[in-house]
Length: 128
Length: 64
Image (cartoon, chains in turn red, orange):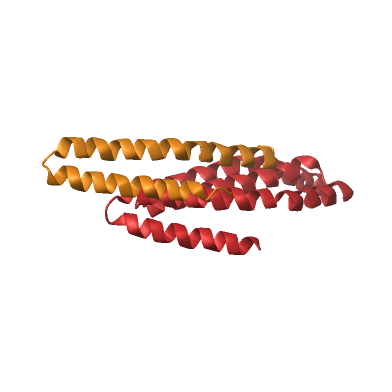
């Protein structure tokens, strides 16, 4: 039961962070970062088999592999951006968190430009 | 999945907090400040490995 492991780690780390928050808030923040990282790494390695199945479906339906990898990259950017922004928000730096989210949005838009270009190509071919 | 890291960091935090208390009580505020700084840096060094592991995992998985 992996969910029990995750919840147990979360509760233990929360208790430790609350104990330390009064005396040393910076170390309480680092405990919360480490807990987030451990859970994140644990969950993301489980995602591997799902990705394999999705890749299999994509190859079966003859979807261009460029679009598929673009979607995967967007998902990865979203995960990492969300993680960084949450850490900054926990430490009370919500302005830095919003800048991180802004950076993630811009990078996702840059990733999505080729798909948009392909869509415009299709549309112009239909019209002309 | 190494939970030991959380306990290690909590132990470092408690030790640093106690040292800070003792050193400020005995009037050595500058050394207490140094202890806090050293504790933070040590914990940061422990975290950096985990952060790079996370980034490597994401990069290999999503072919970034």
